[in-house]
Length: 122
Length: 122
Image (cartoon, rainbow over all chains, first blue to last red; front, top):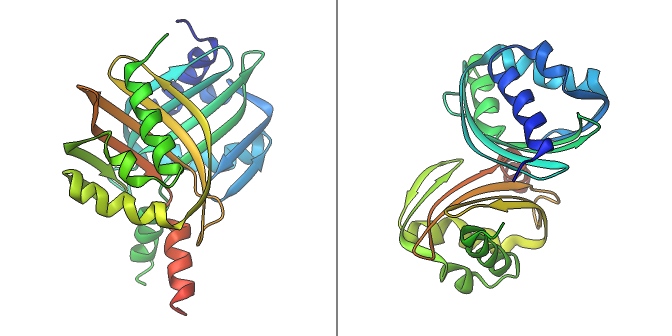
């Protein structure tokens, strides 16, 4: 089964995990709606402010699974980051006209919170 | 595309989200390995100790996406729970001989930690 949505989702994924966040953003619609653990982000600039900093602490990634159909794709991956050695995530991506218009991301904020607290000497 | 793994993953999913955890466990192999946010759990009893209590605080669920192939399935869902009104999760399920032998679950522990701290008056 070919999946146009999965093609876009993987192009986006490979760009940001390859640390080319600007290339990743070329797959993102201006009016993207992102459902992140901290809440809803509307628009490409809000999305950039969320995902951009993450790619800067990224040190490795491993795509665990990826499926898709005509309009949606679902991915799970593991990442290695500077503060957290294993930070898996999952993304449900909706594509329209070749761009990502909606992205729901699930990951565990707890180890990032713990790393931040440790760094702050709490 | 039919997916034997997705059939099992959905049977498991519908059972636990329907609050019939014992029925859900009939789809779980005795030697299941579960990769959870807090670490690796080995065996059905360890898995039961992790997922069982969660189903007791569950008040609702919404399957957002589900895909699968011969041996693996990938699901994303939202749940409503007593302490956390929206707690989405994703599961990558591996099936062998009709049973779930590996399950990687991603969800955000942060709101559960916050709810626990609030309940403890921290």
